[in-house]
Length: 170
Image (cartoon, rainbow, N blue to C red; front, side, top):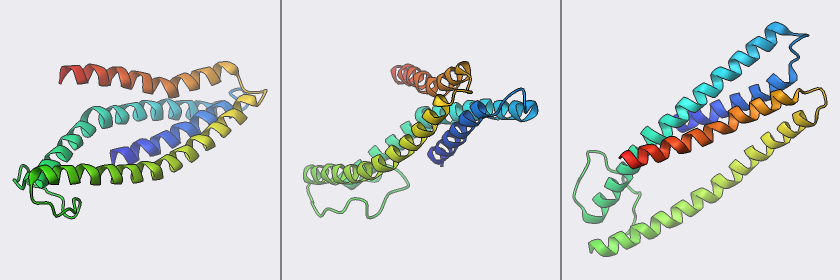
């Protein structure tokens, strides 16, 4: 759910960043103010949810995946929730079961990533095309373009710094 929220906030931020560049401050001062405020709020919300996903939810989900992997490999319950039907091998020895599970994970991950890559490329291409249209528009203020780009892309820089600091403290 948090990843889905990040996606939605990204689209909202992207749309508002383009809208902020298109609405003229002198002609529509109240609309301009609302767009700027909404854009700032959406960027802060995107950053906060993104940090929560990367620093809180993802490590816990990864730990659960490790536990589930070991439960299925050794047949000893480590947690109260176990997946059913995820690992589909009939190996009996733990070492063979681990090898089969790693192979299953690899095939599943490759398939999932190939499907996700297509969708992500389409999203990026659409946003990039819209961004270029706004940038090429001669009436768009270049300072506004620079500010919007910095806000959108600085989240990734700050997030990586926080991830490194939290990873070394764990």
